[in-house]
Structures are given as C-alpha cells and as structure tokens.
Amino acid sequence: MPEPEENILTLGIESSCDETAAAVLRGGRVLLSNIISTQIPVHRKYGGVVPEIASRRHIVNVIPVIEEALQQADIELNDIKQIAVTYGPGLVGALLVGISAAKALAFALDVPLIGVNHLEGHIFANFLSHTELVPPFMALVVSGGHTALIHVKDYNHFTLMGQTRDDAAGEAFDKVARVMALPYPGGPEIDRLAAKGDENAIDFPQALREKRNYEFSFSGLKSAVLNYLNEMKMKRVTVNPANVAASFQKAVIEVLTQKALEALSEAKLDKLVLAGGVAANSALEQRLREAAETHGFHFYYPNKVLCTDNAAMIACRGYYQSRIGMFSDLRLNAVPGLSLMDVKA
Ligand code: KG4
Ligand code: ZN
Image (tube, rainbow, N blue to C red; front, side):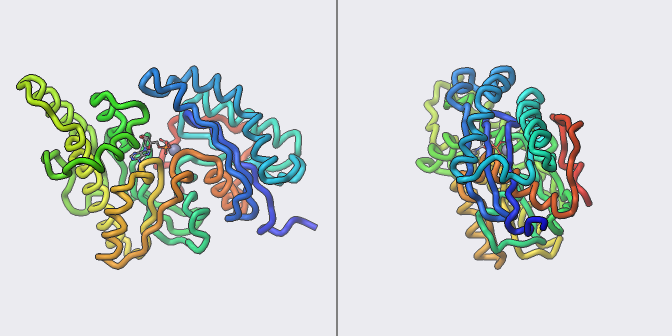
C-alpha cells in the first residue's frame, strides 16, 4: 500500500548560501525537525560571504546536519520517502554540496529527488507558519538576492508581477550597513539601530513610485545614503547613525508597502504573504500589519526562524511539487542564476 500523502516524510536540504540546513516534514505542513548550521560568524570577518569558504563549510556540515534532522524527528533514514533540495539560485559551489548529498541519498534509498527553486521555498515557509493558509495570494519576496511581487495562483502556478531592476532589498540593507561599519549581515543591525532613530530625519529617495509599476530599484537609495554620509563627513557634521538607519529603512519599507498594496488591488486578492530574509524586519512587519488593518486584507509572514534560509521551506515546496509529479532525476545540476522568470505562469 502506498503511504497516504499526509504522512509522507520529506527530507529537505538547503545549501545555497551561508546556511547548511536539513529538515524533516510530515505531509505538507507538519515540521518534525528544522536544523540550521549558520556560517555567519565565519564570513563576518570578511564583511560578506566568501563563496569558496562557504562550499568547504557545507561539505563539513551537510552530513551532521542531516543526521541531526533525522534524530530530532525521531526517524530512521529509511523512513524518508522523498528528498527535496535547493538547486538555485545561489552560489554554484555551495548549491552543489547540497545537491550531491541529496542525489547520493536518493540513489541509496531509491526514493524520488525533487529540485526546488529557493525563492519558491521562501514563499512556502508561510504554509508552515500558517497551516490554514491556502492560495491564491500575493507574495512579496524580499531576500538578500531578490525583491519581487509574485501572484501565487495555486500551489504550482505563479505569475511574476515585477522584480528589482538592480539591488535586492536585503542587499541594500547589507551595503548600507557596511558603509556604516556595522557587522555582516547588515539587515538585522539596521533593524535594531533604526528602532532608536527618527525615520523622518533624512528624506531619502523612493524610486519607481509611479502607479502600476511593480518593478523595484534600490541602488539609487543606496547611493543616496553613501552620498549623504560622505557629504556630512566633508562638512565635518556628526551624523546620528540611528537616524540614518531609520530614514533608509523607511524609504525601503514605503516602496515595498505601496507596491504590495497596488499589486493586491490589481490582482483583486485579499491575502498578502511576506517572504525572504528581510521579512524578519520588525518595522516592515509592523507597517504591513497596519496596512492590512487599514485596507482590510489578511497579512501573513513566517516565524522568524523560517524567514531566513532554512530547509523546512524547501521540504514544503518539494512536497507540493511531488503531488503533481514534479520530480528531478540524478542529472539535477545547480542553476546559480535560476530566476523568478522561470516561475510557471
Ligand atoms: O532570504 P535570505 O536568508 O537569503 C537569501 O536568499 O538571500 O536573506 C538574507 C537577507 C540579508 O540581506 C539580511 O541582511 C536580510 O535578509 N535580513 C534582514 C533582517 N534579517 C535578515 N533585513 C532587514 N531586517 C532584518 N531584521
Ligand atoms: Zn534565501
């Protein structure tokens, strides 16, 4: 007798950047374990992720992380019925470590392999935090590498409304933090510092604010912050870093909020789902929660631990792919530039 779908155990593996992660999921929504080994302290001294070091750390960590995920889920390797792994976007060497481990295990256990788009994974993190959530909805994906609005029509049909032309929101946070001499990753540092500042102290630009334009651009904002800091230095004016952080953060949040509201209204949807590392930003969450109350839509965002990179979201996306037979074979390769344009309309 085949296993009922709601009991099927999926092992998720994630290694696209600087987190080595494994998770075990029962059915589509019951998370049995979620292990994340972060390399942030290793990369911090370089001010960002060093790809070669990331790959080497993934090699050391991947098997122990998988073993811990099985142990915490209180299951044996043989109980795993399918393996979902991130195949892009991300760092090629880093992705290949997770993919190789997943292929080896799928072959040895003779179970299906499922290649997962990391960005779709971020969206699916919400299904784990909100078991009642079902499509259709509008997803605002804000991560270190991407910023996009995606109309999620059902579990396997997505339409891209628009994405960033240049820097991603998280990238802008990290770059601004770097020039302010804050440690990597800059997003959480700016978040903390901004809470002590005045968001109206400096008027930073908000790009592409015209209606029905769902593209984003954050490189002008980043340059405006750099120019401001340089100008103040030349004039020997002492800047208040908390005010700079708060004003920069406000410019990002206002653009994200305004475009999300318009996208919701154009697609006639009443659910907004936030996803990606920047979803952990407390001011963004608060702003969207307020907007949801004012405009009467439902707002969802993942638990903090599921906002940044993890394998639970990969297992969840993999489960829904398996239900429509979207499996991979052992030729699965890393696609570092896998884009949101590849989503199925
Ligand atoms: O989704 P993620 O873990 O990795 C990618 O797929 O890119 O996102 C990482 C990004 C980094 O840019 C980090 O600075 C940002 O998410 N981030 C935050 C916060 N926590 C993480 N940005 C703003 N506020 C935060 N609290
Ligand atoms: Zn990510």
